[in-house]
Structure formats: structure tokens, C-alpha cells
Length: 259
Ligand code: F6P
Figure 1 (cartoon, rainbow, N blue to C red):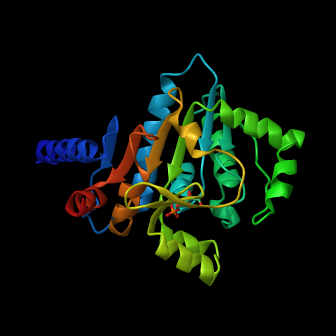
Figure 2 (figure 1 turned 30 degrees about the horizontal axis):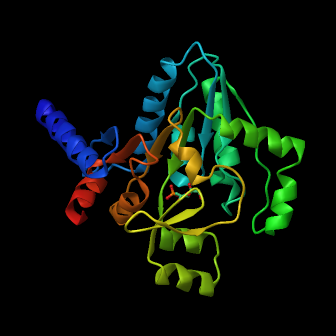
């Protein structure tokens, strides 16, 4: 039976990989088990991340992360294995209006400690004017993180539905209506995507731009689960930006269903 389960999962991974066109899809089994929750996905992803880092032992790794409850599970379930690593963990983007527990800064610090590395924070308040943001970028402390981001080796990020993220960030009614009008379905690190994968709205912030994700030497990993997120994942994850998707069985089946 175990073999059957594993075989089923690898077939599913191959199918999802085909529709997304990315290099790898990793699916954590067990989503139909009543005891399954997001923690399982977090633990699985934390393990996969460590495997990737094991192959980069002799070089410095700059790891960028985003916020959200899924990424918080990755950070919280990651275990400290007593190993010190040449790794700097940084937030992928500044100030996206999340509670402190699920902010990228907090997650970066937790992951850095568990991996025996160091971290930098990106202290950028939300809803700043463009001109203020531009001058903030010249501040040495912020500039250092932005320079690190430009050289990041790995980005691990969550994906949300446009609707949920707009609510969570307290967007105004007119902004929410605008998102509906332009057909935003998915969100990742401040960018809102339509069903056909176009960026239809951007949160004003500093940090990674979508074009940065196209860099060949940046490994981009999306982590997301939940049937309600299937459409969002399909809109966000593309071969243009992504290398790996980590999700669960239920979400994967739903993605195939609606594709
Ligand atoms: O706000 C940070 C962020 O990573 C978003 O870009 C993403 O849509 C969201 O969090 C995912 O959050 P969650 O894992 O809680 O669904």
C-alpha cells in the first residue's frame, strides 16, 4: 500500500509539473488524513530546503524568504541540527502589512537561527510614498539588504489568493474593487496576478522585483497548500519565474481539476 501511495504521488507530481512547466513539483502526501494540516507541509518543505542547502555546503548562500502562515510553519517546524552554515537569510520584500508573527523579518530570523546562519532585516513601514521609499533605499542599512537580495541564491515564498491577501492587508474598498475588475486571483510577495499569469497590481514596497526572479542563478521555490489556493497557485507559478513548487495532494488534485 505504501508503494501505491508513493507511486500515486509521483504520478501526481509529474502531472502538475507538466501543466505548470516548471522543473520540479514536490507533493507532501496525507492531505486526506483528518489529522493533516499545514504544519506537515511546513515540515516537509523545511526538510527539502535543508537538502538543497546540503549541496551548497562550501559556498555562501543568500536565502530570501517571504511572510505568511505557511512560511511561518516552515520556520517553526525546521529543526536546529547543531550545524553552522554559511548562510544569510533575508526578507524578500519589505513591509507587506503582516502581523509580526508572520512577517518576513521574523521568519528570516527564525530560519537563520535554525540553520546556524545569520540574518538581516528589512525595516520598511507599509504604505509609504514612492519618493519616501526611494530615499529609504539609499539608507546604508536598507541598501545592504537590497544589495544582498540582488545576489540571492534561493527564494522561498508563499502564495495567497488575491481576495484573502487584499483583506489581510486592509486594502481599501476601491482597491479591492479594482483588483476584482482586473481579474486578480493570486498574490505573491506583493504582486497580484490574473488567471493568465499577468501582474495586474503591485504593492508599493522595496525588495525583489519580478524581473529578479528570472535570474538563472536564483532558485525560486513556491510553497502553498489549500484547495481554495489552487487557482492562485496556477496564476502565480510559471516557468518564467519558478523552479520548484511544494504543495500537498489535495491542492495538486484541485489544480489539475480546474486547469
Ligand atoms: O504577505 C506575505 C505572503 O507571503 C504573501 O505574498 C502570500 O500571498 C501570503 O503571505 C501567503 O500567506 P499564507 O501562507 O498565510 O496563506
